[in-house]
Length: 500
Ligand code: ZN
Image (tube, rainbow, N blue to C red):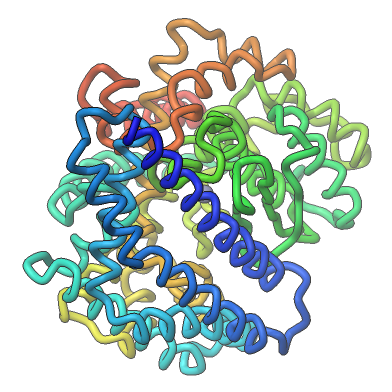
């Protein structure tokens, strides 16, 4: 009886905290979408107050006592309450170690850094952003020191996005990818490039927006609960709960495929977010298991569905309707080859499936070097350009298309990038399993992804954060994680496509 009361108090507390997070997410979303240029200070002011309140709620004596009490009676708790308690306690234990004033000013720093990053990117001038990035790296290093003094700061940060992930794991994982991808890429480079003229032209925003909404419907998103906006850097966010999810895209006037794949990618995130079990709404479990599991879903829809032959069969008729002059005389095979043209390019979010992980490896190496003290923030642009030459064989012409291209660091997301590459690999292994019971291509050809979505919902989405990512993986795969599932998928697909 007593535990039921305690559990109810825990639910009420989480509901209240989620209302604060809801307000903060909406402010962030507004800042990224429609807010006027000089309003960041104003939002930073409100954000400072809300953050302090949330911090206070988290670390309040009653909260800690409640959670400690629940933890002492852990055997009497159900699975969900046990996980909520554990996650909240972990969070509080860390928060307690970070001085409140430092934490609040860090949150405010991020709001300003976001605005400065926008300006710096526009002007292609890293120097503008450098002092902010320096402060962000410094703060992250300090926080890591407070929270886990015995750990390498980068191990601590990796764990923030992927529980248990370490530098050693990443080195091994990226080593496997490199072993397969580098030779694959050089084989591809020796073959003639498919023509991708069909993707190029002059595509008004209004036409691209129509395509975006069609894609959202094909994906099976509920447009009453999932909204679409435009931003420099596409993303997905939930406002308070999985009942209100926003995705964004960017319309590139001369390439319709840019926004198309962004919408499918973010749509994959939105499917995951919006199918978390209703019983988890307004709790800390309402969201994805981890960033890499999240990316496994977005990259699954973007690449394994969106870049498949089957998808071209429903895409081509739609293109004939929206851009008849481009689609005329184009076959599904032409389209398939065009969207799967492999070519080292400058921008990660626009990268093809084969080179994508190399973009991630650049960021991983740089973050690791800065946090190990082997590289200064000042030296980052030069090191970035050097690694692009080394891994992708291309020269970076300016900061805008180099070091300033991603918003992650300005938002304090350091240690996040490896999730993208891990997500690719998880997605490939999920697909192998799904294919045993679901005819994925047949679903895609019908334009009805219900069976695919149901497989993901049943195995992954509904659980939200109930399971740690490694436990969820074990439950779904019933076998160890194998990055070679991903590399053999790439070798098979592109071997056939490029004829070797
Ligand atoms: Zn993503």
